[in-house]
Image 1 (tube, rainbow, N blue to C red):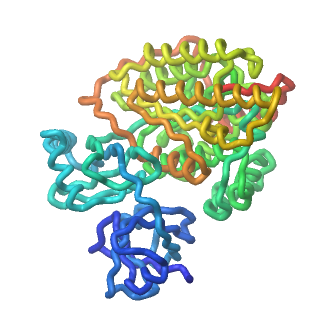
Image 2: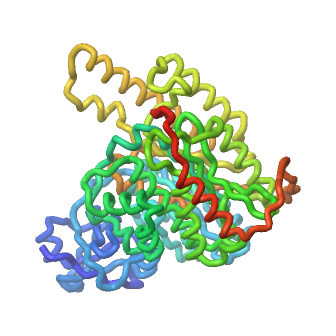
Image 3: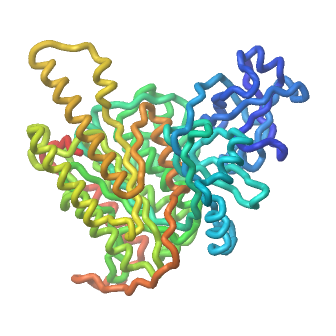
Length: 506
């Protein structure tokens, strides 16, 4: 059947899609069912509760105008509609956007909503029975507010039930730190992909940089994402970061964005400007005054600090110690208190310096040290949320493999054991900071999470506090223009070669 044409309407709830009754019958869809709607022009899927309406033309699908526009959809987009499983929401966290309103006013509204065990919000949802898409907005006309879905369990969508735990909070601008696993396994293991789902080459900045030989890895990533049924995990990670950077740039806020790549060690994406060591990029820095300049600098930063091959080391200290140092510098530089979202991407366990030869006891010992470090250095009052993304094989996936014999059977058991340790470690880290762990089975889930995470953070820090700025020891004076110096640093990183051993670590 030919795709339906999107028609943007004001009188449709943001979680509802309306189609003709006869069309619904042909598609095998019943009234008020949950459907997956794939937008061929945007290359992504959203989930809706379908309403069959005889007044809708047979070749049209009516969706909420504002919701569609926020996600980049337009009138006339080609939509494929198919039945989807109705997944009950265990937990949903919603944020109230500032939208120019006074913070105290919004805090009062949210306090009222959350009173009496959230009875008011439950009554609202019981009547509406919405479908939660990560990052989607739900409009509450009586309150004069819009609620943005910041967290769903399970992921990536779910349906409200009376048993769903609901939390509503006010959000504010936030910094973002991405930690990306660049160990050896990221370069020879794959994640399932849907070819044609994403059109990265349509971005003018990406398209231009792809022609530069220095960014051959960007070209390989884009070609793989757009055409291959399976893509390397490192290409999936690069694309997820690109989407995050793009969304952050579009916010045009004074939010800092930083990157840490790590294998057995960690390397912070840093640049120097006028004597101060900066470990992040933001709009408003010299040479970064527009969204386009910001996006380009972020992309260049990514490829300066993601190694081209798996045997290139990420020189530095332990990833979490480096993270703590980076965060401390950010806090000292800020005139007001701003929360920070950290996203850790990994495809395996942390082995330490022993690499894949580490024993299970070694891995558990290092994992416990990481957990204790996070507990000690990232208390709730610091205003940090750590999310984690695990893209390695899960024990459940490994259980589906044919059981081998002899040494191969032992290797499979070890693999399952290490996968469980990795997942347990990441889960405990996220729970300590009120974050979440996701284990995407397909690339589109990974991409959607990073795209949404750039917009969504729930954290109420109260009144901003002035933080005294301290000088960093060993600072040198630099008179060069920011952009020239950053370009020079990228050039140096691109030209570095190394023959060090391959690491396959968390």
